[in-house]
Amino acid sequence: MEDLSKLKEIAAQIRRDIVRMVHGAQSGHPGGSLGCTEFFTALYFKIMEHDPNFHMNGINEDIFFLSNGHISPVWYATLARSGYFDVKELATFRKINSRLQGHPATAEHLPGIRVASGSLGQGMSVAIGAAKAKKLNGDDHLVYSLHGDGELDEGQNWEAIMSAAHFKMDNLISTVDWNGQQIDGPTVKVMNTGDLHIKFNAFGWKVMEMNGNEMEDVVETLTKAKSLTGKGLPVCILMKTVMGKGVDYMEGHHEWHGVAPNDEQLAKALEQLPPTPLGDY
Ligand SMILES: Cc1ncc(C[n+]2csc(CCOP(=O)(O)OP(=O)(O)O)c2C)c(N)n1
Ligand SMILES: [Mg+2]
Picture 1 (spheres, rainbow, N blue to C red):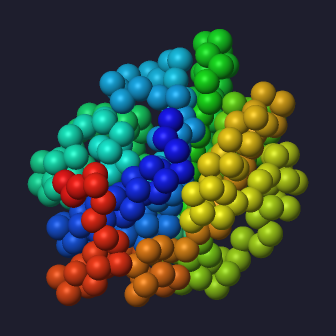
Picture 2 (spheres, rainbow, N blue to C red; picture 1 turned 180 degrees about the horizontal axis):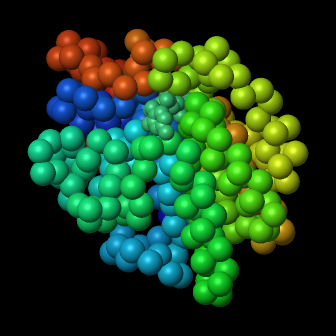
């Protein structure tokens, strides 16, 4: 349980980790990773009850599923900084034989990963299954999931969203990274998903909104979301973020969805993301 200033310091370090990892591999997804850094930090360092001594079955702890698996850099950095594995392993991101695959996978047995993701649209279904299992097991812990806004173009999401309400999955908190961008343009141009607040509401969810780049708001909203579980409805958080948050030339540009910075761009990014007492990997 960390206080706000400590959470901000951890997030600052995770942002450095993200740009260094993607630069080191010369591939990967910095945009969504930087946008969701506060969310991951708050979730793993404040909100979830979880055990870095990893147990695949997740019984008697809160569990998290990343559906938009391409933002693996922020998840890997958060898991390492939380003690799931050595931070030095972050240097192997996307390298041959690494456990840190470009998209999370289970074959490599990286602690913290319970299902492969990156083929978009599947994580909500997985999260609902896990939430159902928790209920069947009499385990009153929660299931959290994260989804991209562009990812919601995938139809499987809407069947899952409908079924979560039908099965009263009130132990599920699903967050959407509402950055308005996706791989090849703004979401309104590629596929306008319309008013997500009204849509989730109409599908039977409790809906909240937060500024995903304000740590105070993230902690407060996630805490409120927890208090709204157990009331018969699944909870959705629409999280406004800025793609590439923290690196000025990346901010708000879909072009940084999945491009690695070169040496010069890395230096510029690190100037804007100063070192922290936690230290680089
Ligand atoms: C089933 C499937 N279709 C297409 C893709 C290719 N793809 C990867 S990321 C992406 C865009 C996702 O947009 P969003 O979820 O908003 O992510 P962001 O760009 O905001 O990080 C697409 C279409 C995929 N990975 N899986
Ligand atoms: Mg997006």
